[in-house]
Length: 449
Figure 1: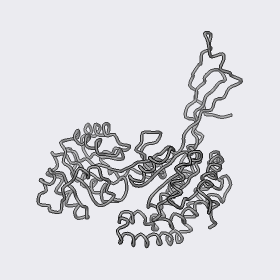
Figure 2: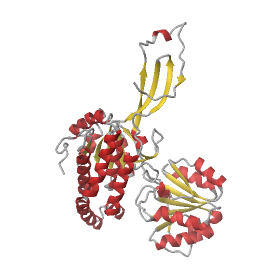
Figure 3: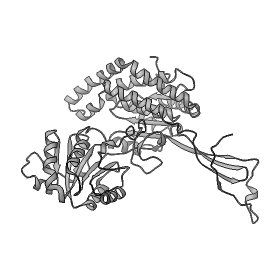
Figure 4: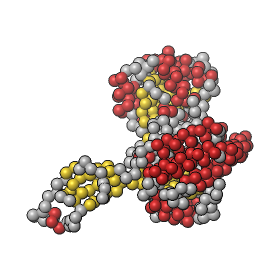
């Protein structure tokens, strides 16, 4: 591998290079972007040993930090890269290459008057700064999506994944620039926390900041930049088991949502159970959780129902607000779907929530009134993911109500511009008592010259 052109450059120099590259990348042909993505996938496959060796350095250091109590076991788990994880990275990059290019699409077209036509056309956002913690595969997902959408990107991963991130960055940077059409300098890796603080001030170069990490990280970013921020501060996800739930299905989904991978933002943190089914469901569910090593924090009704289970701890008010990212779950018995909806909209983070029920009317009410970016019926919250949603990958999950919400894939990394094509038209004839009227007729055509 060759070293990136940004090696040794200051953060301002990296941002300047990214801005210059973004102007060129915005018009890169789809074929060139897809070819670059396929080269990246091939490089990941070819250099598995290099990636695993770099990751092993991070893992060994992280294990010692866990022993010292400086990082959690959950963070260590997110850090691990193995051959199956590399396979996922490769699949993700190749899937992005297969997706339709979202750049240059005509979103709307109208005739303002004869020979005066207005087109709304999708275009890249520009330069995106992404700050992410722990998961090295996030670097690959973000890079692939930014390349496909014609955006330059500044990346800052967690210090615990420094070696992994450096190896993956060099592979992406080198492989993407080996062909024609992709400008050097479209991707840069930041190395220090100080560079992040400086990046947050560079609104003349950077158009969007995407933080992926803890609630503390996101709030810090939001409070220290005037650049637009896209992300989610917490993943407080709920599963609600309704009185009309099929019990075996509810057991499987509730287990999967918590246990399958507890260290991620779409894992369930609170289980809500209708009082009408709690007596039948909760003893079975709690036994399954306990066998899996899940710590349970329960409301008074749950404690009373399971008073023989001494392992269960009482839940505090703080528990309903907490994203554990670990094998811990809070459980509350509620009085029907309305009570569940009220709890979720009060304590939830707008990320992902699920209802388990065979009653379609109840399911529809839940899906309409729960104010979250993803709402599931008879499915695990763990499906809330850009790759699983068919987006190839995701740059993050947004709980904001802006141009992108939920898992943010290609469509969330483009914006639009207006292109007006006339034949010598001026505004004067359209003003005054005898003003000419606009036709505002919708056109079925794509923008072209």
